[in-house]
Amino acid sequence: MKDSKSIIKLIMKLWVVVSLICLPIKAQEANYDESKVGTYTLPDALTTLNGQEVINKKQWEKVRRPEILKLFQDNEYGIIPNAKIKTSYRVLEEGEDALDGKAIRRQVEITFNGNGLTRKMLVLLYIPKGVKKCPVFVSPNFQGNATTTTDPAVIESQFSVFERAHQTSRWSYDRIISSGYAVATFHYYDVYFDQDDKINDTIYPLFGINSNSDLQDNTGKSIAAWAWGCSRVLDYLLTLKYIDKKRAIVLGHSRLGKAALWCGAQDQRFAMVISNDSGCSGAALSRRNYGETVAKINHDFPWWFCNKYQSYSQDVSSLPMDQHELLALIAPRLVYVASAQDDQWADPRGEFLSLQEASKVYALYGLETLQGSSFPSVNEPLWKGNCGYHMRTGIHDVTDYDWQSYIEFANKHLIP
Ligand code: GCU
Image (cartoon, rainbow, N blue to C red; front, side):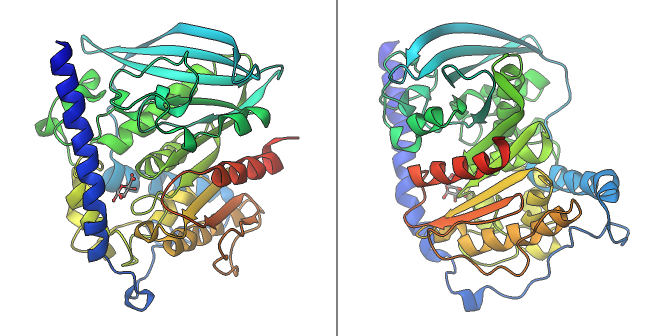
């Protein structure tokens, strides 16, 4: 039994290594020449499907926002069936003196029951000590809860194949806690294995979806599931007296950045949404031929988006929406898009242009927009109204610089 577990761990590790080796190969095929991006016309976030101009927030909220939300549901991320499932919470561990005595640690198992099946999610939560009501970051992790910290009390996530403390550089827990924010994380595999043909092991069977053949054109897959997971963590957090309902933040990196955006677009309980290097089918405009494209992402990761999305691979101009409208769904709440200079695969300029275009919707709320701003220089964050952007030096990653910027931006808006 132990042997078979080690073999599975080895295979999964090899799979991760092979995908990382393949990344530069894919990247070489992409266009990185701004003069070859091509011309494109973006769908107007402020024109309804029947051609009416949206001139006030009432029209936006009643007509255009629901239209755009549905376009993303039906054509890109897909929906999660609306079947009732039962959820329960069990505190597995609690420590009063975590992170050098600055935080309370709580580890909670969330159990979902549906369709005669059970799925479990393990949440690691750190709360700053002595704060009555604090804002909270909800952010899924890639390698398992115990890889995010050197804290020996952290329980290993069920599907983690990595050593403890393997990815601590991405988690500025000390900075987060010292700044008065709580933080909750879970291993994204608890919700959906990041592999093809794994639907049976995910949350979908709770809703009666057991294999690819059960999928409708607009049934969600992994991105929708990871987004769903973030909302389920928030459900739990909102039961706690020391978490401020009005100051929850969802943050994701890369594929989990796509998920964080999709989560924040739908779940308006999140007061701030952060995309860290989410790139193609995240913050970046799909119609720009730069870095990763819709065709490439659909080819390489067919388990991320709904089946319908595949039909746009050969002609992105036929997409009835583009990613700036995903960002616009977050309006008037806080939105932060971050890029990295050496992460051209994610198209930093396309991420900025997308946010700039989305910011038009913020004007309906009397907020400042990014219209007229030029693409900022590296390490010079541009914050206007409720929209924040930066491109830092370095590679595709989450760094302390990113956390510091998110916290400073959040402090400006969320801390009285
Ligand atoms: C690949 C993929 C990206 C994704 C990234 C990640 O590079 O092409 O779309 O964002 O993996 O999740 O790290």
